[in-house]
Image (cartoon, rainbow, N blue to C red; front, top):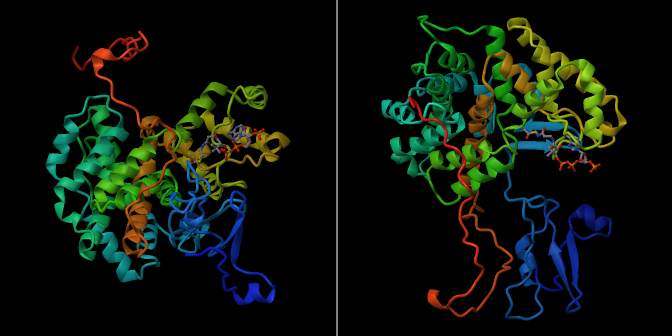
Length: 466
Ligand code: ACO
């Protein structure tokens, strides 16, 4: 930690340029100057604590409500350069991985840090394939949900419930338990995801088929009817595998931060991953592709696009599926999805929304209003259209995001376990409330007449069978 007026040693490069790898801060309240070491382009927030006016005070904090400029960990899983439109996992570009790899291989890469050898991949694939079944009691848990329960709510409960079936996963320091939790999570989340869909549809749950690959098995569990075996069209299972690769990890976002934050308490990985599922359920995180579909339906035909774009410029509408907090260039994932869209439509029924989407993209990219604001299509612009073509209902879109992201959450959770700097996450606050009030007994209290309570009740949903 830096101390007041401490001089830092410079790196050879910095020293030769007459520069020091430190930040000099002057507190204008006291006139004191502090040197804070810079490492990897960051200063440690704890180094601010020494800055105080009075020796008895707590010391300076950094205020960053949405972690918009705060690194919360060191990670070697995923690299993103938003300005350059780069996404890499363990050093491999997302384009190379989508071109050459499979989702299960990418999951291995994320979790273990290197591409597997042939025998390693065979073992990993075997282990995942042979842990896709869930305990029958979990099926009964799903049967207890209402017929119209949101599939993300059911999946969230199912993932949390897994911790009760595997209590040994609490031994988070045991490498074998960690491995088994990684395998079980990646293997069983698709099974629970498909159960949630079939529960909504009123179909009997379909069990996994170990002869199929990961994406095929998921589509089989979704769509199998009376046939002895459901083998999905190759074009669809291949594109789904690419979509799984594209969504496998995206470094420290809301849900990954939730997994790490909850996991930092030492809880088992199923419970930590359930926190990630809950975070992804939020419309600001996992729900944009659904909003893209609604927007395309509202536009209705390519002729309406100029009017729609005009309304966007007047800020009456938002161009959903465009723009990204990190990518201020083309989202590399959107470029890859685009390459696969024709394969999907050759294998499915024609969907007029694609025509609208393509024309909308073309016009927006020709328009200075969007390019000057660095608004390019993001991963969600086309993924919803592909899911819809596969006959996956919109309320399942976030569930389809959860399946591959489970691998990323597991990788980040594993990395956190190995990190010597890991501690229970415990942010600070700036307290803005009252202090030192004197308690008044209820009979002596005076206050506003208005009774605080819930707003007037809305009519109830009809119950099943009502
Ligand atoms: N449509 C129209 N204008 C937009 C859009 C959009 N989709 N996105 C940003 N802008 C405008 C803003 O109004 C702003 O204009 P101004 O400078 O004239 O005020 C400018 O572009 C810069 O936008 P910011 O608000 O700074 O962008 P920010 O990084 O905060 O927002 C976000 C990123 C939330 C993704 C935004 O672009 C958006 O809402 N997009 C639509 C929703 C969407 O597609 N989300 C999915 C993201 S990908 C994912 O989560 C997997």
